[in-house]
Amino acid sequence: MIGAFLAANRRWVAEKFRRDPGEFRRLDACQSPRVFWIGCSDISLPATEMIGLAPGQVFVHANLANMAAAQDANFLSALSFAIDVLGVSQVVVCGHYGCAGVRAALSGERQGMVDHWLQPLRELGWRHAGALDAILDLETRANDLSERHVRRQVASLAANPLVQDAWSRGQPLAIHGLIYSAHDGLLRDLETSVDSGKAAFPLVHGMLPKGRVSARRARPATIRGRK
Image (cartoon, rainbow, N blue to C red; front, side, top):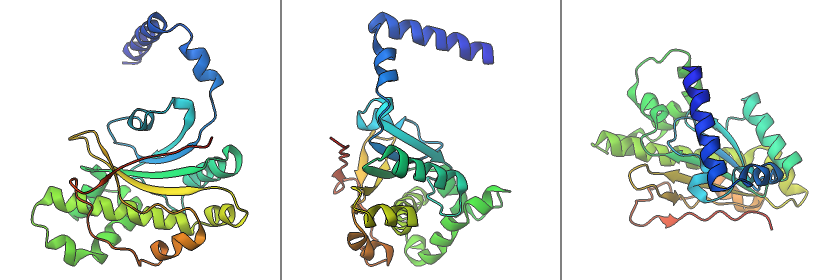
């Protein structure tokens, strides 16, 4: 298997060189991330492809069900590095429809150790059980919870001391919640963007609308990096 991976890598490099011999040198010199991207491990496309940026312009952290957990040392290390060392100006939580983690949380079935990781998602589902149970179609129900989960992770980030400290010292930093659909390739803006402690207050305290953002009325997502 590893031999096949290495052979495929050599073919990929050869094709890259054929098309543009200087691409790798440019990528190596362009390690200046503008965006910290928190995504799901099983999403079908790299973040850079979805938003049209070069690999060196996006610092990516991925885990099961795009968690921004304040108790996860791995995530906190990545968040601290993104804010304090790289100085990113944009933080994105990107979920996706058809998320395996969300489906596992909704199923109620034991998944082993992953149950501990998914506990916040399961609790979110319990908190909104009335609204979710009213959705008869299981896929639509899971997609609804996926959107609620992204909003919850944006709120968690906005309340994170690392983010609060950045805002307190006047560091430009905006947080966005997006969701991706593999059916059409589009990112959808869940309208939870915040860029200050004051702007984040309603979101953190659950004062924003919690209804779904449908595919028809969702606004196209736009990510702006630093100049």
